[in-house]
Length: 149
Image (cartoon, rainbow, N blue to C red; front, top):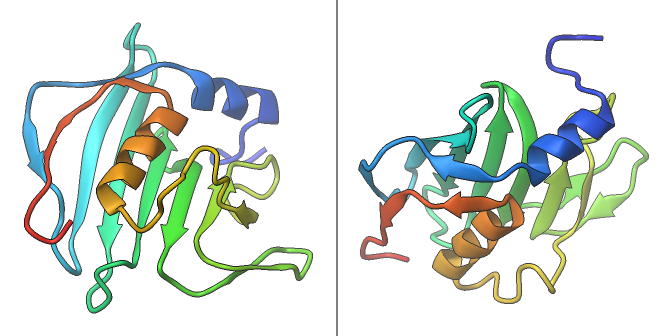
């Protein structure tokens, strides 16, 4: 098993694990073409996570929210405003879509974004809040909205 491959049960446990901010730093939501990486940790400080926020350069409604474990393992990713995703079996999934870690494939599989968890994908701020809820971020970092969100 590669260092970036986890058993599915371990990945599922990491996704479900309560996550908290590492410090009281304040962050600015990225502008067009920008990105932000926010450190998170488990409540017992045994696991480290990263919350990634990426914005499109031209299209303000294009971007990615991502939760990583162990620096490189993508557990959950939401892509919005972009191109469809082609799964390893050839199925094309339109954007927005959700990637969940799958053993042996990492983040290569996507599914339609569940409306119950992400009811308003056009509101990027609310979608970020929904994403943190989905990833079980219980003590959230301070992220300032900015002008274009």
